[in-house]
Structures are given as C-alpha cells and as structure tokens.
Image (cartoon, rainbow, N blue to C red; front, side):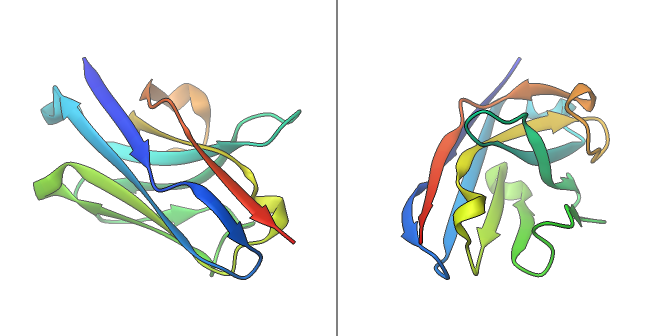
Length: 122
C-alpha cells in the first residue's frame, strides 16, 4: 500500500502562483512514476502532469505547458507541481497519483491522494 497526501492548495488571484506538494509513504519502493490530475466541478478528471520517479522525462498537458512544472524529490518521496500564471479555469481539486509509467490516463494510475482545492479568482 502507498499513502499519498497533497498539500499547498488555496485561494489565489489570477496571475498568481501556488506550489502543490504530494508526499508518499508506505511501499514507496514500488513507485515508478507519479502524476497530477485535476477535476473541476461538473467536469471529468483530467491529466495535468507526470514524471518518472527518477525525474526524467516530465510531461505536461497542453493547457498548462509553460505555466506549470512538475518535479520530484526522491529523498523526500515528494512530488511537486509549481503553478504560475494561474487562471480562473485552473480552479479544481488537484490529485496526485502513482503509476508504473508517467501516463496521461487515469487507468494507468493506481494509488490516489485525497486531493487539494485550488481556487483562482478573477
């Protein structure tokens, strides 16, 4: 079992920044990749970013490229999502999850965190 705890969400004005963290515990030696997804009210959960556990080959959704950056600190078993130039349409609950590869679909991920709310005001 792997436990994931997200933090860092909150309320921010458009154009502002936030950094989300996701700390993994438990059987972390099984983790090969981690990703971030988000779900806005009334919408499906969507891919945001993913990265290998080694930190190689990060990938980002087109909607966040150039604004969001995923990174990982293996020593702390923590993955981050730096979010800059935030827009109201970035408002959602953000979830981190573990996977075998840094995929873009939910079915590729097994363990999920409880989510952290990000609200961007206009």
